[in-house]
Image 1 (tube, rainbow, N blue to C red):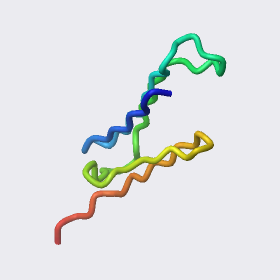
Image 2 (cartoon, rainbow, N blue to C red):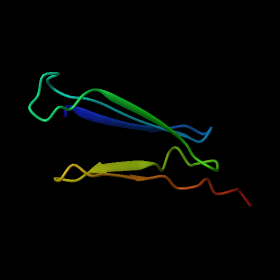
Image 3 (cartoon, rainbow, N blue to C red):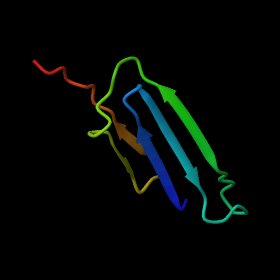
Length: 68
């Protein structure tokens, strides 16, 4: 996989997409895009993601904290 992109926006959507380095690869990995609607407003500036050596994707999406 060349890169996995994880983006979030204040409307509460999380977009995960990726493109393999080679389209004809031995693992059968194809380009993908997944959009997930989250139940509440998120803090898009604090969203983070990491891919492990085993190919697991972990995404941290904190909720927006109201100004008091």
